[in-house]
Length: 614
Ligand code: F6R
Image 1 (spheres, rainbow, N blue to C red):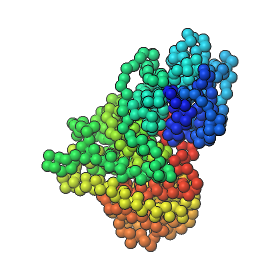
Image 2: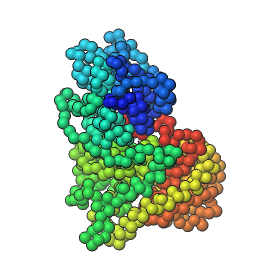
Image 3: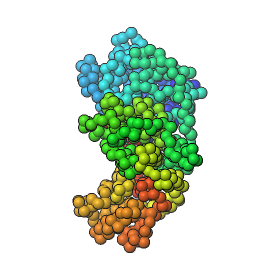
Image 4: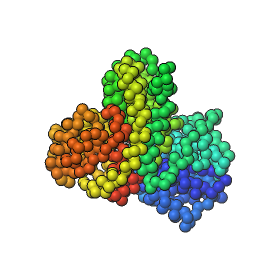
């Protein structure tokens, strides 16, 4: 939902703003712009389209200056257009701002400004902010910071804002509420950005701004202030992510790179939690979570999440119920927050979010906390709002995920919930020693098995080249294969724009079979051995109605040979862990379909990586 960036220092600002914006392009990419200050004047260049187009314009016609702000947009209010692109300026062009978020009361504010004679240049909600800052700045005591703070009092909604003013060429003012923002100081100067990858090249020491906090950036230092203007003294946090993790390296797209990073991402989630017992046996042990009486007495687990993280939550339901014999309620966070859910102090509350910034998931976590719950967050983003608000944080350690479509975050989220379920199952006395050992051995083998799947990527690539033109693609499976079907259908629709759906294979006859014809592709997951025969019948049912099909399985390949067009064989694992492997060919399939269709898999239309607004 838009990325913002800012720089003030001893180098040319434009190339730095463009570089940092490129790292934020996953947040939105329908328009881009920068404002640069030079000799007491603000110069703006902004346009509809990708950051590359802006960069080309700047190469032809540079903007020089050593401080500035930048924006990459994902339109919410006002169509993508040059005029609606950020930065926005006041009528005199003395103040410029970039904004990520939504100003909910902008209509009223706009009317009030218009009645005072302000003429608007755009249809955005953002533009009201710059006019209000200007209003307070001109009519008040003259201090820019004061004008910004007065303006914030009038705004309802969410914002990460950066403000520059031609009267204050030595500083940039930045502030956030419910939209992410970090500030960091490096050798070249001071920076702000919506997310960590944008700054890795320039600094590793950052402030994660809290809600309401203001950062005033100077060339050589950053001043943090509270929402009343009081100075805050705080140490920076050190980011130890590898800078290469936010680069494509030799992959054509971030998505493919991240699919290939999954063995490592799963290892990162697994290894810190595998310890040795007193008898030298491997045991799961989360340093973050101490299993105590409350876990023994728990009656239910409640999990809320959105999108892919929700699909990981459904896997969590199956895993907790399987291993720990505890009922699990899974909710879409957007539903949970509005449906007056029932709270019981004995329940365990978990939210899952890659970014830790998803508005609905944050709202669900806050609702849980308001009702006295202790919230456990499973997230990939250190310093994110969720990681700071949750009572317990379980990091997935997948490293930065740049592609909009989530892949390695999903497998590492699953790894974390499996481990939690195993630990809880043992703690509650539902797993005996032998099966426990067997499960740990199976989980430990998963990263290497995932590498073997990736080595066979050409099978999927060729299959996608034959099938990508199908107008309907369905995914089906039973038990643990059902949430994998859901995730696969989501992935495919996001980046290939193909109409895809998932259904529990047992539901086929209850409706979906009516959709099957010779223009349909069905991808069937058959990894649950007890349900093989059922899946064989389901595949026959779709094949006999003309559908093409791919079976993703780990066994009994002969049984599928005659009834399907293609078989992808997975390495053998415990049935319950198959999602960690079976989703990989499905991710590859979505990726190759998107590429075949000429889409950019990293930047799918209408989507942004982090949904920080409702
Ligand atoms: C799917 C995808 C989205 C996110 C969802 C939640 O590929 O990326 O569905 O999974 O927006 O995001 P997080 O996990 O950041 O809360």
